[in-house]
Figure: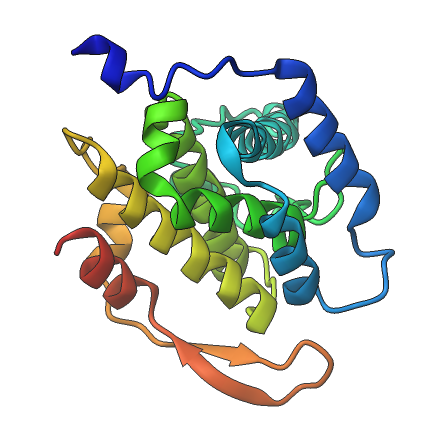
Length: 228
């Protein structure tokens, strides 16, 4: 039944996937009027069908690769190595000497817009996604970006506002949906297992003011989503 695992058999178009990514890169971003969440919703609607889902996976891959390259270069300059399976020890060991640059990575992809949109599209159509692409690398990229997002809050003084919390929630939910759609769920990575042992609620701020508007408990959310 290998033919079924590969999906419908419709020919995928790498050129179309590239065009989708480039269109989203130009159409949306921090320079565009409108909220990050509003832009993410519009972008996610364009990531439908096999080519759209493959484009979404490409966005996650490009963003994760760029983030790793940035962190690895900073770590090397300090005499450390970056393990993209688990960034937390590096952030702890460098004691605040790393910069969190996920808003300004080369390529112009924004975590709260393009990454959020890609994750939303993949989670919404998870069963089709696992047939259209190899879900293991995509799942790894989701967890890698989640790791870096939470590391920014804990170690780099990144303020967890509603846009940041929405991204973290989206990454966790999409990881849940992709794992549920797979025939064999892979083991959870070490950073996720570490967060699951916690029960800390983090204040969530309004993006445009110092007001606390809610709370987010990453460990609790991961336990409920990924251990059910």
